[in-house]
Image (cartoon, rainbow over all chains, first blue to last red; front, side):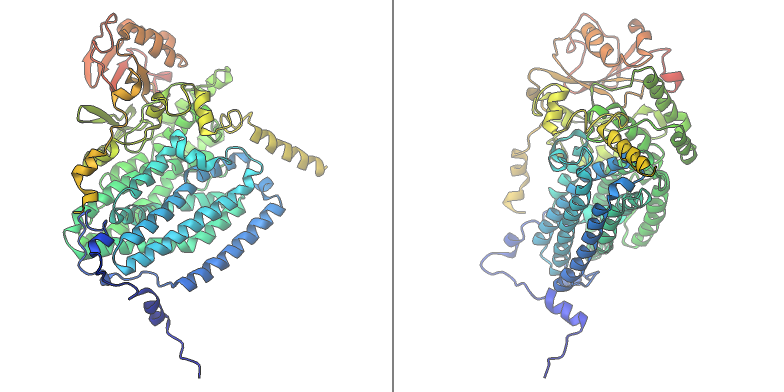
Length: 504
Length: 122
């Protein structure tokens, strides 16, 4: 007689619960040394509700099926020379930014969730964190495989892993994750699980994937579909984490609120790279950053925080400042890369007239008044053979590590300068948000590896720009500088000339 | 709280990564030209604290901003200076230190009559 098959719920309980024990040779506090010091109080770990009941065997089966589909599409894309069908070779610079800046974060997330899973003593969140850890490892692998096809043809991709640890602007995403991973397991879960994966993820993921779709990059779109069901699982984990912590003890609220404030602001700063990508780098635009912010933060985030108000949780501090920033950051960031194009591992370009008109339409309050004159001045200089470069190194914010380019709330003509003194040393910040983060934990941020300071201290291959670029493994003359005149542009024009000849 | 996370022990391992002693005798000075945001941020310079303020202006600041169309029109005798938030009139013959510039000081300057490309603060 065949044994009765177990129901899904029963099967899930048997495979995820009651697998551990109270230790006796060593006290539990030594086995789980990190889940108390942050001050979070958990009364009942068993109150954790798994938001997504997936057993490991089902997990392998689903993921295996998705992989087969993804790799079939990648093979077809390669065999059909899909790289020739994208909107324009400028688009590949989006992939360069993604592979150097974002994909290594997937690996960091894998490590971070593995650590959190190991160090949370409740079995429910441990299982969920371990599964997310595996997802993140799969994401970094599939992203590398997907984008590797472009590496056969385009510059700026081959040293992505090395660059992530060294290149000045990549310290922005890198230090964001270093900060999360050097926090305790609960802060990590709020930082990445809630603030990033729940509140802000749509602002990262949707723009890159719809940008790929609009610009003919079917391989990256397919990667996006393959990751989508994982992302929705991550979102439900993020919301469960915050509800669980807030339900367990009222004393958790101020700690959680501080983390939500901190990680919202840090995430907002990192996402400035996405803002620039949407408004300046996609040859075919999806929507403006400002529109995306309205849909995915103001509206979706608004209803989320209304829902969480019953726990006493408030909208993140400085959310209003971030919303006002949405009128500015993409322009300020692209202007930064334009003037430091010689030190960037992707190409830049001057927006043409049609592009500037689109920006005027999308940013009626700010573009014509503050940013169009900047680009017109530089366009004028380009015409005279005096293309504008900034040959000095910029002041950086001690927390987000972005050059201090952001302006005062309410006055886009004045750079915002903030500072704090700790034991006789001065530290500079781009905003009240970054200053608050520093002031809450100065011992952490005085240790920050600041790219500009490291160059001046002689730790980055030498004192000249070519020395530093060599240390970055940035192939000067190919990876950097303007798109116009680049080997990428020449390759693209050659393909199109050949296609035109073939068509007669 | 466990030993490994004891605050005192943690503090013993904190190193101030950008302490003055790590800059080979230089101090780090930030310079910002108001109303000229085409230079996206203040500029960082490692400088000998004994450098004269006059040399800072002629050999460091002026060349760094030379690419701007306004640069050639700066009358340096009319420039208004501010160090770490305080208005001051520098003595060009004295050193940076004697003028009040320290490690990671911020030096901001305004150029009366020059407010960027077509007055747009760019």
